[in-house]
Amino acid sequence: MYQCRNCGAPITRSKKSRKCEYCGQPYSTKREDNLFQLPVNTIHWLGSGFGYIANLLGDSSRKTYRRIDNFFSFKSQNINRRTTNLFNRRNTKPIISILFISSCTIILSSLYIKNASQIHQKVFRSGEAIKNKIFSFDSCNSNYPTSKLISLTKPGVVRVISRNGIGSGFIVKHSNNHTFVLTNSHVVDGNSQVRVAWSDGEEDIANVVLDTGKGISPTTDLALLKIKGKEGKVLKLQKKKILIGSDIIAVGDPGGVLAYSFTKGIVSAIRDNGKAIQHDAAINPGNSGGPLISTSGCVVGVNTFKIPNSEGGNIEGVGFAISARTAHRFLGKYSFSSSDSIDMSTKSLSSKEEANEYINKARKIYNIKGRENETIKLIDKSISLFKTSEAYSILAYVNSSLGDKKASIVNYSRAIELNQDWGSTSIAFAYFNRGILNSQLKNYYLSIDDFNLAIKKDDSKADFFSSRCFSKINIRSYRSARNDCTKAIDLNQNHPYVYNYLGMVEIGLKNYSGAIRAYKKQLLIDPENKWSNNLIADAYYLMGDIKNACLHWLKASSTHSNKDVADKLTKNCYDFSTTKDNPSKSAPDSIHPLLAEELRKCIGDVSLFCKNLRRGKFKFKK
Image (spheres, helix red, strand yellow):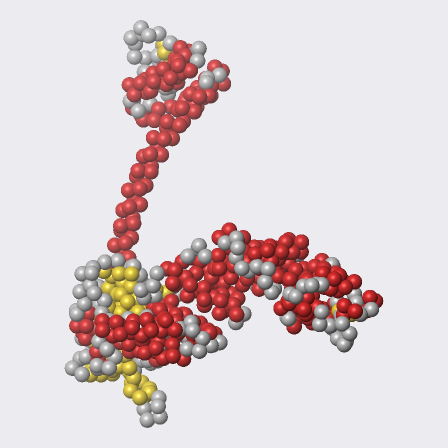
């Protein structure tokens, strides 16, 4: 049965009047009176659809269909009341409400997500365009205040670190997923690779792809560096000549210890037919290679040198920069568009081959005792011709064998920095050896960093994990050390000393019985291990078992003649005074029962332990 949308009165299907006989109001067919602003036919179609679904769900499908059909026929002002009465009075299936709400939610959400995605893309593209418009230096016609110039140029300035010094540089181009940095040739100092530090503290290795040579001319003291990946912000070179008296800012890294500095000045003169710019902004040794910025935000020169005075210093207020025009001409010699551009090297192929010959000679003798000086001479000749990682690695090994650990660490660092013609395994061992040296110098945190880098390169070496375990023991990070020792045992169950380290970990965790088990496993693997008996004795001593502690100290002292262990015996167990009498014939009351038992076991035994035990008469210290 139909109902009036105004008052809810029943209406017969055959009724042809356009007005309700109860309220006198015409039947509403306007679009705005319908639910969700939908046409009447659509509402009836939805009602029929949901009624059909309800018919499949229960026995009361017919009544449910009429309820839904009537529900969508109500006037919008009576929807809430009629819906509440219908659900409360007729106990309509909850699943119908769930289906209805879910369908509406999915439709509305899909529409919103689609529109939101389009809006986001438009805003993102607009934001990028705005950012490029505001923060790019394409025009070189702006006039920024000093504070704005500093914030805009800092991301484009880098620190350049070579083996012989520190300087500055700035980004001139992004091409083929590479970043190109311009600096001074004397900063590169003839190296084929240098380190580049960014303003956020990160570092990368840069290849020298173009170098004029530091001795050619002060106005051509330029070098181009190539770094993999797109980093930093490009600072545009100004093509227009700068006028005398113009304000400029010199940017750089003075001395490598004061981070970035910005010094302001003016252009004092234009020298050498426009190739050099004289200015009065302060230039310190680390500023070389940094940009000279105009108020437009563009680079007008590359800071390069100052004039020395008679006292060995520099004349203040007189600095020079290579002009942007000269820098443009220098950059034009390199093909940025070619992805396979060949990196230039100041060393010829013949020099490299000759250097390798010296390395081959050194490789045959570097581990022979007594030939260290000869090896050093060969490596020095090789390095003077062409610097390689292997040459510095051999030199570091020889330094270590001569006891110069600090020099060895420096040379391992140079080998890692160069990283030429090395696989990941060789680099991993360089990190590992440097970590061992740091550990011997008790720089345990540095050694852990080196072992981490070694493991990152090659995680299949048990020595890497066991050495990191030992360093962590010394900083009392016992639980982490236990994980490293366990990993080392998994990689090599017959490791020559990792069980001793594991025992030390258990001592730190006060698990003395676990430590003793670990030490005994080490003795099973290596019965001649001179530390295991001493460590077992220490564990027994901490447990309060003096008898077993003295026994193992005695074994360690008699077998390996360790003075520290002998001192422990003297302090805690026995007096090592010796008489002329043979201990085997001494009075029974003058020998401790433990020693007497050991002497009986040594009858007919000619081992080192028994020989040392028979040398003197040991008395119990009272």
